[in-house]
Length: 385
Image (cartoon, rainbow, N blue to C red):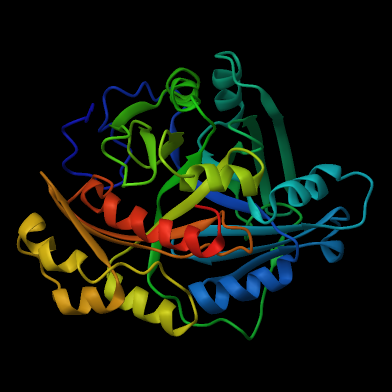
């Protein structure tokens, strides 16, 4: 396992805290995540009601957009865009994406200072162009966007918005609604996990390293992430300032079908498996989400019999963590608390992780066995293990 050190002062600033990353773009953070969905209006209601997102912007027929409808939701630094195609011969990509994958992440948009330079730097290093640098304007200024293809049908769009003062992007208008439930304390995207096919993890780790200047933060092999029945391998890639982290998972040999294989079967290829969102108070966040109907993976109560021996002293009450099913792990710099939702789509594909970091910059290695056993129990109920 390789593990980059010197991760203290992880404060999401612009300083380069991972010197192994070239950071020639550089990335300022995650701008937005866009999901292609079957019904954006209803999906927006779900994420507002269950996850505490607020209305931000809308684009559709009323704003001059004829091939799709998009609703933009916000919670602190997180922006979700939910997009559904309209009957229009100019948008086969949207229909094909939803038919093939179901609801899922299409665009991971990255905030940059110069979208043209970001496109030039990545494409000259071998990335396949998705969107050539394009200037979009309205009365609020201009936005420049460009993009590249990544694993499966997932793309990265580079967003330059330093000359724009609008609510989101040109052709979007402010979306005002009386239904804005209180947020649940989600703050920013901590990381986003991609599932790729057999023997493709190193291919995509190399892509992020050579094409985008990322460094390998941590590598987990099938001995680190396995149970009696299944296994997987993962490499966590990070940009230089630590704002953008992409773990890349691939299946590993096991007695039964792993969660990665199940995902690939139902998503019909590689894609974003889960979005990890950070909170400052995971207890209150999970309580609020549970009350609103979000379903979380069940963790066997025996997990808590020995967890304190492994992680040592923590601020939270163990009984309360056990009641909510929140996992705990520790590294050299502190500890973290995490919990995972069940899939938020009908297909067993996309889910969310809720994470609170108290110094730790790792990814919960000590929780892998308990987590994967919980996932296997769900797979067994679905008949896909």
